[in-house]
Length: 342
Image 1: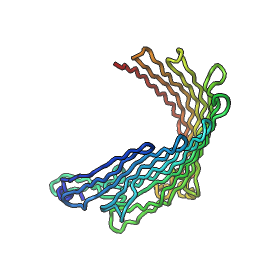
Image 2: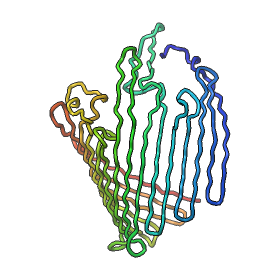
Image 3: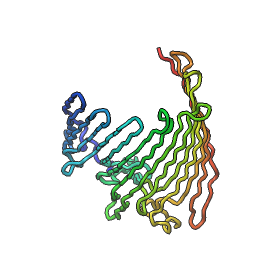
Image 4: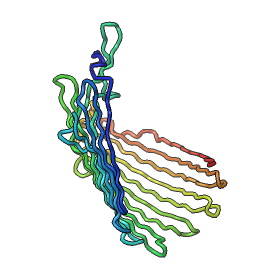
């Protein structure tokens, strides 16, 4: 706890490593390793990393990035900390396909801030000590996602573009272990979800406008969604060049709706004592937004950007057995920047 001398954890850490890179006509990459060795209080840690890119002709690109926890307290025996694999396939000027897999595996630290800090305790000298023992004990928490997309160009000079994309995301079960002796551990069930996205764009519409619409939907697989909520988003936009190509403007209108997914816990969300362990939320949100953005090259060495957006949020939530509507929130955001290049 906070009364233990800080030097017991070790103040000095030695670090070292190596790296190498390679390059050929159609591929390049690098690999290496690093070690962090505290001089006291903890065993050394060794990490390995590799990244690479390969282009098979003009149609196929492959890439990867990986970080391995090879040796240390959190490696059992070898832990995959970060992994990205992907492929881009373009068989022609009108068709493009992409596929990727991503995994992020993080090691939680032994300090959990905010509401989970224990109450301060009185020490003999009359001061107080903040107790910051582990709430989520040392463990690995990972998220995984697999994505794919298809984009097609239609019409003369690919005037129309249609894109469809989807992703599957997964997080395994997590166990929260309070530091107090005899306290009950809390299990958060695994979460799975699917994201779907679609868009249609006309690059040369009426009045030489570039217009389009896109729709996205996030849904749960099973009782528990990946982000504890299901959402839908709709957006329409239009834009065009101005000043004979010196600038461009774009305007958009969007609507987003999100609803908490209780994971079969609807009854526990209406009790007086609600815990994040047995209620993932019981609210729904709607957001309407509109705005625009302008880019313009004022002179050859001066470039300006400006935007403004107005949005309104409507929130409804469960309060015991009643549905309560919070006051609507209206927000206005804007940004202006002028850059000079010399």
